[in-house]
Image 1 (tube, one colour):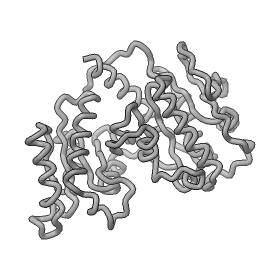
Image 2: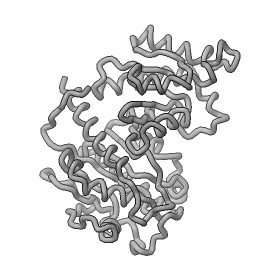
Image 3: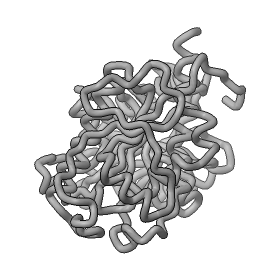
Image 4: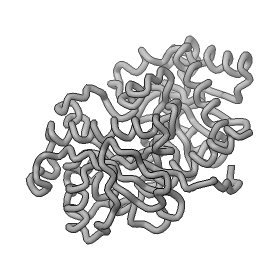
Amino acid sequence: MEKEIVAAHKPRIGITIGDPAGIGPEVSLKAVAEEEIRDICVPVLIGDAQYLSYWSGIFGLERGFDVINSGDPIPEGLDHPAIYNLHNLDLPPNAISMGKEDAHCGKAAGEFIEAAVRLCQFGQLDAMTTAPINKKSLFLGGYHYPGHTEFLAHLTDTDQFAMTFISPNLRVSLLTTHVPLNKVSEYVKKEGLEKLIRLVDRELRVYGFEHPRIAVAALNPHGGEGTLFGFEEASEMIPAIESCRHFDGIDVSGPHSGDTVFLRASRGEFDIVISCYHDQGLIPVKCMSFGDAVNVTLGLPFIRTSVDHGTAFDIAGQGRAEHASMVAAIKLAADLYLKKTAYQKK
């Protein structure tokens, strides 16, 4: 996993700038300005060139990007940062209300994502990294998806996918994502868990794990304590785990008590934990690695990574946003591209 892999060319990473009223444009510009990013990839910002130029001036960042207009191909010999310009923000840059939910911004953010997907599908980009979006603005803009993950799955006709978080010492994949807590148990079913275990095992092998060690976190306290605290482990989860272990040869175990399994994984006992619900998995990830964790969508036909934070409307446009998570997301996209390329050459 740690063996250095050298690519024939620097991967082209498309970076959607997210909701224009949030911190996405700021963290994207700041990340692309970092030498460590330019050393490992060719970053292509996907957004509105006039808007990015405006904020580059405000933040005192580079403004001399090559601009590629939407519909034009990305030049084969591109070896430095560029902007793929959708020119879709009709308002003057200083007329957009920063930190506010807005249909115009939501529509633009959705169009940035659609453009990045097309470029990946046509081989113009090797991977994509996404800045944060505001879900209500996206909805107001005409895109009725609970988040990036489901939107990307729809755009690529992907049936099996998983929201996964990767940090330096912990990896977590989610069985359910944006589901009310009182509905989660309805989704903890043998068939769905089996599909996720198989997906995670297959995807981790692509990205350098020869024999992934998968742990499944229990839904109920103490793993249900022999059905005393819940029946889902006995009726749905154990049968799924045993099926994948015995019939598919997958190294999967559990369900492990949720109050210890993430710590055990962080100490190296497991390569990844499958979490039953959003906060069960995200709380340990963010407690241990906030700012260093990266959101990865497993199962897509191309690599997609994202920051581990939201639009931070409270500080949008102030130049105070920390861009470490965006740097980590871009670096991981480049690394996963190299590992996937090496795997496909075997």
